[in-house]
Amino acid sequence: MNPGYVLSIKDLVVKVRFDGEGPKTGELVVVQNGFDTKLLVDHLETGGVAFCLNIRTDRRIQKGMEVHCSGRGIEIPLGDKTIGRIFDALGDPLDGQPAIEGELQYKDILKLPARTTNFSVTKPEILETGIKVIDFFTPFVKGRKIGIIGGAGVGKTVLTMELINNIATTGGGLSFFAGIGERIREGHELYDTLRENDLLKNTVMFFGQMNENPIQRALIGISAVALAEDFRDSKGKDILFFADNIYRFIQAKNEVATILDQVPNEGGYEPTIFSDIKVLQDRLSSNEKGSITSVQTIYVPADDLSDPAVQMIQHELDSILVLSRKVAEQGIRPAVDLSKSSSSLLTPEVVGERHYVLSVQVQALLQKYESLKGIIAIIGENELSAADRTDFAKAKKLIANFTQNMHVMEKHNGIKGDFFTRDQTLQSIEEIIA
Image (cartoon, one colour):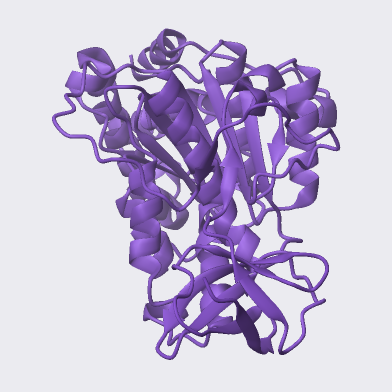
């Protein structure tokens, strides 16, 4: 295959011209600059021009340098040796430990797995999280997707860390964590928490934090999913997949689209926003070999739930837990807006008759509470009928009942964390309603 040469450089975009047969989309090409700088081919244009992305932000590239095709894409190591480690988007370790050695198999992160047909879903299996508000309003069902939605600083990461802690402690299979564009401090805290509780032996972590360039932030979730797929398909594992934050994936893709001079879509997002979300979410699926159960935090820009990216992600989820700044300001933790949280899994077939009937009663009380709040602000609580006063008091007790101390916050506030079984949660609600 004939080598190419660097045609132009614009920030992280490097145009390379190939005479004759060139690389394929998604392939890595290597710049002959003495450092073997790798570029990812984003797309091809007529005239043998490849638009390549400078994954590592390597500035040692000059116009006219020779470029060779590698014939391979971004490949990450597979197998049990990856458990307990932290990787970047290219599968290189970030934990200060030596690179994985020995006879290893690798997988191209952009290569989609074979589609499964005739996969019959067995009886839904509920996984207890120990967090009242999740177990009651958005039941954690094996092989399904939960979204934790909220603006900045309302507790999305804390809730995710608590879920990892609780589920891993109860021995719930293999956990994956993808840190997409979030703070480095949060990544360190999560790693320390898992190490202190001896949970790293069941966890694989991928980090593309906010200090990385948008190319790595856009790839990190895909790399994590690719390895999770292999554990599911090759080893028949049930995976718990945590992504923090899935909106940052869209944000990173948007930045990449901007440097590629692509015309934006609705809301100023990249033109491929819908397919980007759909492809990633479709890979977080289950088949007859194993399952991937995912928890995804979703940052809401300016607390606007109608944002097109947030709406698109929501459509792919089975359950949505909305965190609210107004609730957080009242000192309620986790700061869940009970009236906006919803789940398509809250049915008698999934959660049972007892849980379903209680959920209907609770939602009715909470809706009445919201309507009565406006009336009370004008005429006062004493002017309500006896029945309305009783329902209002029950709703207030229910809201307080869903407040809970987190294990992962113990070292910050000195308050011991709580864990409630689903039966304890249902019983506490029955006592309030009765």
